Image (cartoon, rainbow, N blue to C red; front, side, top):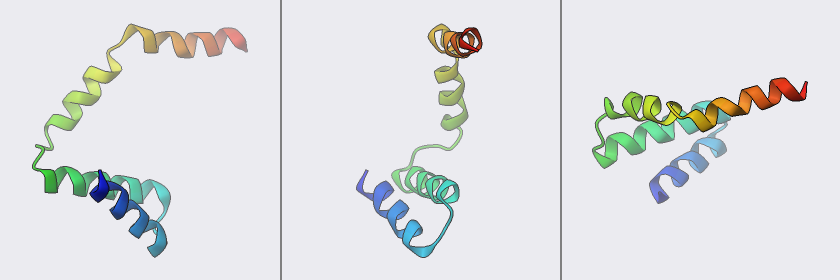
Length: 64
């Protein structure tokens, strides 16, 4: 966690845009911690496959 935040703050100070700084620091942390990069898309799909998250856009649509 310290590596992730430290890298992100360093990139902010260097003037890298926020989106790129977050992505680069996350990728660097995954590589240095030895987490396989093929696990990332799998976890994204598992996290999105949730019926509770389906209600959020529908409530927003109803609110409009």
